[in-house]
Structures are given as C-alpha cells and as structure tokens.
Image (cartoon, rainbow over all chains, first blue to last red; front, side, top):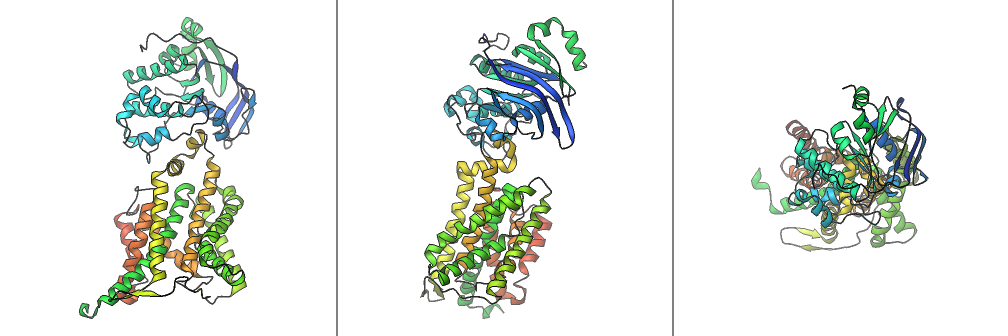
Length: 245
Length: 293
C-alpha cells in the first residue's frame, strides 16, 4: 500500500470514547487539568502538543495506568475511572506505549503471542505474521534484539491479537528512520481502513496530518483546540504556534 | 591426608550434599520466583518451610494423616496462608520501598516461629520415614527415603523451571517481572497473578518442609537456620534467577558436604566464603540474566 494514497476512511460512527473534564496526577503532581474530547467509531484522532503537554498521560489515564484521576472517561457508555488496567483492556482497548515495552526475557514470537485473545476479531498468529512479515523471520530472536522499527511493528502487532478495536498508539514514529515511519503510517492507515478506532499521540505533524481525521491540541494538560485535518492544513500557522515550532 | 579418604566417605558425603542441596534448591527457587515477580525478599520463607514440616507432623500425630496425603495437603494449606499474607500484609506495601516488604516478612517469620515455639517447644520432634529401609550399594548404604528426596526435588525443580521458561503462564510471569503495567494492559489480571505466584512460592517452601520432616528433626528453628544459606544461594545464583537458584542450591550442598571431608571445621562457612568470592567476581550472580523469573 502506498503511504501517499491512504485507503478511503470508513464513515465515522457514534461516539465510542468520551473524555470529560479529566484531571490526573503523578503522586502530588497534577499532569492533566480538565481534558475534554470525544472519539467516534472508526476515527483516527491525534493528540498533538509539546513535550510534557500531557499527551502520554492522557493515554495512560484512559488505560488506568495512571490511577489518580477525576472527571469521566466513558467507553461505549461504561465509566472507566475506577477500573483496573486489565478491566479496561477487556473492554476492547489496546495500548501501545511510547517506549514500546518489548520484553527482553521473551522471544519475538513470545512477545507477539503474549496477549490473550479477549474478544472475537483478534488476529491469529498467521494473520499477524502475514501483516508483519519481517517479524516471522525473526520469530525466535530475543524481542529487544530487533531494530527500532521492527520493535515498533512488534509492539503494534501485539495489541492486534486480543481483539481490541480501539487502539491507543503513543508516538509510533518516534526515533525511526523516514522509510520506517512511512511503513508504520501504512500499517496505521490499513488498520483505520479495517475499521479500527485509534488515538495517536504524535509530535511529527507531517505524519499526523497524513493519517488522522481530527487533531486535539494539548497544552499544559488541557485541550486548547480541536481541528479537522482540513482545518489544520488551512491554518498551519495556528498549529505551529501551539507547538512552538 | 587424601589416602585416608575412603570411597564410602566420599559417596556418603555426596549423598548428604545432594540431600541438603535438594532443600537449598527448592527453597531458593521459591524465593527466586517471589523476588523475580514481586521484588520482595521473602524473609518468611524459612518460617513457611518450618510450617510445612510442622503441619505434616500435626496431621500425622493429631489427625492420623500419613506422609503421602500430607505431601499434597500441606503445600495447599500453607500456600493459602501465604495468599492471605500477601493480601493483608504485602499488597498494602507494594508501592513502598522494597525494604518494607523485607521487614514485614521478617516480622511474620518471627511471629510464626514464636507461636510454634510457644505451642510445641524448642525440642525437635521426630517424624518417621515413610519409606523405611535402603539398599546396600557396596560402597555405601542408600536409604530409600533419601533417594526419594533427591529424585522428587530434582523433578519438582525441573517441573517448576519448565513451567516458568516454557509455558504461556511462565511467559506472563517473566513479562510481568519486566513491565507489570503493560502485561495488565493486555487484559491479564496481574494483581491476581502476583498473589498466586506468592502462593506458589510459599507452597514450594511448605512442600520442602514436608519433605524435610523425616530427614531432619521438626523444630521451630529449622527455618531460620536454613534461611541464611538460602539467601546465600539466591545471591550467588543471581537474584530472581530460577535456574541459578536450582543449580547453585545443588552445587553449594555438594560443596558444603565435600568440605566436611577435607576440612570439617570449615564446612559451615565455606558457602559464605564462596558467596564473597562470587560477589567480587560476578556481583550480579553466577547465573544473572539466565532464566530470570
């Protein structure tokens, strides 16, 4: 698939995730100050902002990895605040962290097949290796011996196994060569075309505007703007101001 | 000096070394499993081993339950005690410095040992061998029960190692040791896995206790006296390394026994001399990184 020619996006549906006035803390330090946004079914939404703006914390708060939260996070109408991380995952949310978190004590295959199948629609081992062919030839290698790009693909592939249809991807393009970023973008677009709903944390604006439907601009733990890709393209100066570039 | 060493002496000491090594391996393996996943240095491990031996003795003397059923019942009962302990004592401390877990389990060890001493006294209690007799090999007499201990512990250690290194459950344990939050984000109930793993480690300690009851005297201090050696085994093998704990357990059991032939006075200290040397040469342990739980 060509990176420049994205597959046609499916029509966006109902709201699946609704974040209302979300605040979150790391110990006594407040990291989010009342975030509000929603995500519709089949949508690819990016969280854009400077380092430390609260993008990763937002994803970690949705998953429940950051425990101290107030406000509301509703997924398909169910409140996620107060739920354990594994309970959130079992509702159908997959999380791919920024640092990829490939397990060094496990082989590539063990990393890939670690998540249990929680719901229908999860990819089988064969489908995963077909989608990520370079992982097949390295199946027996130690997970952390892969290149950065391969580790990123493994991290994304891993969360497709348990059947989650809502994905949280934290900076999948970070630190990767342009050719690998292109490959990752293709994979994300393919997932979107298959109907996955995705929140993507991204600092690479070029990458973000190629793949996403809408962009949530985050500053100091708050949402300061929400733009469609067309609006973003039309007013890049505004976005550059937010990002300070 | 060496012409005075008879084959009987060497093989007799080798057997003693293998038996002591069997207990060292099983106990340090349980300790390594707990440390690997929870980062808790379980100071109560010796007390849980002692509880296993006492529970077998109580079952036999008060309820008439013999050794063989006790071998299955006792580890389950003591593991349930461990699960309760994890829920009530260790879980509230999990986000604090690991020193708190160490101190809490040390306190539990002292309380358990004190209560057992209060009830049964300090004198060792005998527990008859469930497999009497033995076989004369010509160069030595091999009691059947001691052979059973060695074989059973090797099978248990290998079985546990296979469980952790070559099964899906083991992969969860190893992964959760690295990043419990990520494993939980896959939908796995990591808190429950931690509780059950502690139960598994405690169950292994109790199993060793039942196994030890006919070999050693059942006494309240049997756990605390072996724990110092067990910690040395875990440190030499590499903290959290399962294969390191097993291999080092047997190795040190044999080293200790062989030292008794050459220099009996040094037998009780040779393990610690070896520990210092191992720490200087390989501070992370001889098997650091190999088969870490």
